[in-house]
Length: 521
Image 1 (cartoon, rainbow, N blue to C red):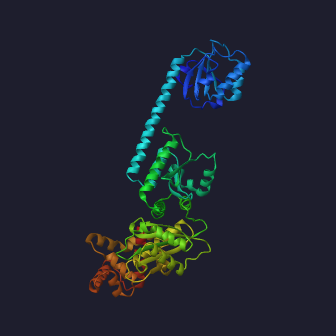
Image 2: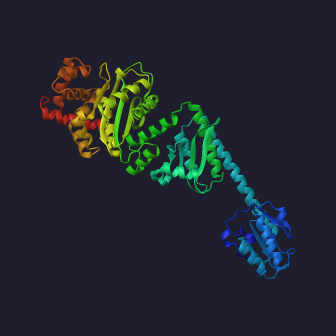
Image 3: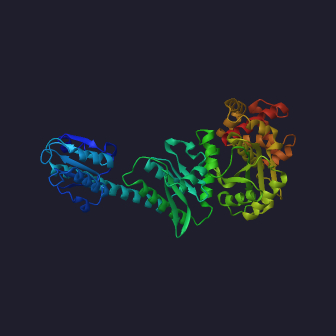
């Protein structure tokens, strides 16, 4: 208000309460009486010439005390009508009580000042109403479209320009939008969240997500800039949208499923800026990583009659993991959401993933997912101690499943990468460009031939390399007759200028095939 032209022209001077000039002004009131305190509601800025004020020091001190008790935002005195100079008692009392006291050294147009301030206040109120309407429309639209929780949370964060977190009742993160704060905003999340919920002095804005008497969690906005609609209003509207989404899901595990699939996309798709950031994401979701041993699993059912998708059967995998006493993350593989289930196990240092434990896990998973256990194929990656290792373990399990998921064995099939040393060796290189260059150099003639002619030489070579020394079995696995298979092998040898009876050549080609498949994942 002090920057308004009509005020500045009157040469304002702040004599007291300079530390409180950030107080909001709700309204401006012109008054000359000393008994105005009972006529105001609080938040007003008073303009006066002091004509009706007390003349003694005690009266002036009492007048200031009454104004403070009434919640007045500040007091503006125009000099020259009643007072040529500001009474010292007035300044002393205002300073002691923290009331902003401003004097105007020139005559002021009080009407112009009140008009300017009131116009600004009304304009701000209208802007707030429009902003609230926009926010209401945004989250109503998201609800009607059935937007998932992570997208709603992302919109809240962008609207508020601040990190926003959706957590369940166990203080595990379901979804979050970090903006420029980075994934580190989730460091030690559960501990920090519990402290914030208990503290009355927290600067976190916390709103419950609930409907029909059921509370599912909380939506939390970390500190940020004010919003025209009010940060609390934005968060409350978003919480309603989340509650409606939760009611529409009718699935008690929906938030867990969304959270785990988000983490799998981040892990497998490399959608994280730092390892520490992804560790924070995992642990904020309740999946311990630090000081743990991590193992990636890939599962699929061979049964054509299996009705549950990988996403739908993820809760069964989590329950089976709990039954064998380990923490787990489960979700559909991003590249094959309808069939392949990925499970990341987090074991304590004293826990062992024995064959018996895997067998128990698989059987309890099959039972919970209403699958025939004899139709289940489970691939187990190597143990790891960090995020890159877990990614390699998941990729190993995925590669094992790709090679063995179609087998027609009529019993539970479990494949461990420990029995595949070449695959482990290739995965240890990660995305090393030298390995990719080797793969491209070895396989380019076959890749180009397949692309140009619509043929299947790569898959034939894969079948051959997977069944060394047994061309009959290799032909069967490639679903070709022996004569056609042998023709394909002869063509491969011609294109590569290689002898597939040479063990070193086959090993090099097998490594190239594994490197190609791994990079594709």
